[in-house]
Image (cartoon, rainbow, N blue to C red):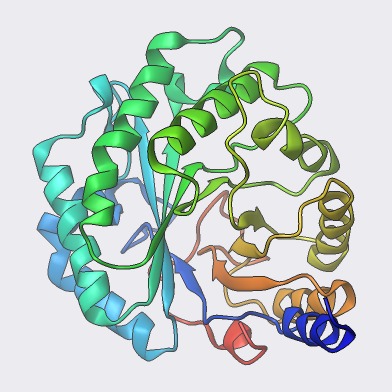
Length: 315
């Protein structure tokens, strides 16, 4: 590589985000007391479609260009957000809702989506004390069954095989789950349309990333073309730490900042400074609908219309 090209690549990587980001969009309404459960966009698109369509249009008009759509699921579970995944299938109405939602996202003008799989209850591998073959097969079947709906939407997409599923050293069963699912997915579909498993950037999880994608009992099908990391408090410090650990393990691919506090000026500036300090190449940022000072556990904004603090800093 020439010196001029090397310098150009460093300057390019120091940009806050190559592409305009946006939001994790999972809920169209929130009741007092942080009640989100009845208002999932996938579960309710047939009932609340016009309202969801207006929100998508407003988010686009406010400068958002990318979305992450969560799929919360579990066997025998249900409600207005969580979808019953018994047997690896969703009800026909939910499949139609997802198809129509993704079609509207494309027609609204959004440039890209991430579809994230959020296993809950008995389907969540981080809860397993021993490998659960039937739940593994159910999760894998659900991904296989929904992937044609995602690809059929005709919008650029990536798939998160397990939200924050990249395990810690103490989660040996979850590590086996990730290794096996990664290699099955990669063998069937390749690696270009997935971020693998999104990552909580704690040191123990970061140091185990190479075991998920490389040092695998089930073969080695390479790595995701981009890694999805989630930053909240101490974003600048954690970003720099993550860059050091992942580069030390040989990872040079770009990142997606898949979750961050909602429209947060302090975090936006911290992340921008961290990118400049490390030269880490970031594709785009997706805010989570929760403010830094929230009294809620996981969500306090619905819908996540505003994006100006991140947009003004290059995300």
